[in-house]
Image 1 (tube, rainbow, N blue to C red):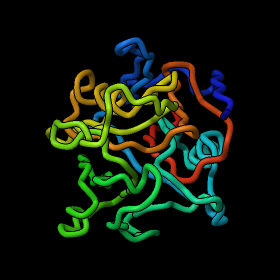
Image 2 (tube, rainbow, N blue to C red):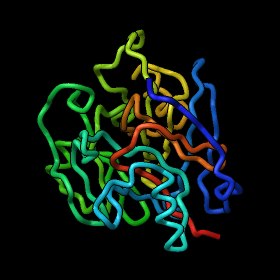
Image 3 (cartoon, helix red, strand yellow):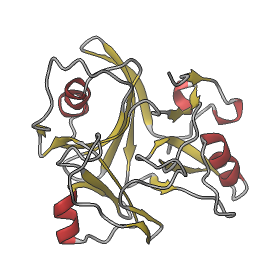
Image 4 (cartoon, helix red, strand yellow):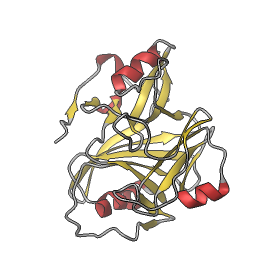
Length: 245
């Protein structure tokens, strides 16, 4: 089992006013750590590789690179499923450049449990679109990541989720508010099933659309909670950028 280690990075404590609002909530018996991101005040983006072309792999490596630019990593989590070489399984756009095409076919595993979806990040708003709709509409995204399954679709849970499913895992995902101005990044702190995790986004966070990002490799970086998970190296990373001061 992936070691789920949280440690305090002293230099990252004391979140500025522009930081995300983070909390740890007990939802139907399961603790879930989550952060609200105001997209009009905070920059949400995706990263994959550093200047050498190698995946950042960890929050520490990414934060160190940002500090060299006079910035710092705000809140962050792994930003989608990836292959052994840490390249994205599905569609991926970084700073306007497409790194991986959209996949619209069904397939094995969680990614292929249709409907899956794409998180599309624009300048001050975001949306989660079902993958085939995304391919048809081709929205202009500065950053995008495809994953699956979708957790919440227009206020409804994914039709394949079972309330009493015994498939339990640590899970992380992202939800977007109805007006597209707020993102919710959440991770379960104990194993839960998809139905439980999806209900958190719909019933507690209030996001009508939400996307599953990953399971056993799920990690969260949230300085306000004194937390930065370590362990298995990541592929895409989803997070916010803040001034270093």
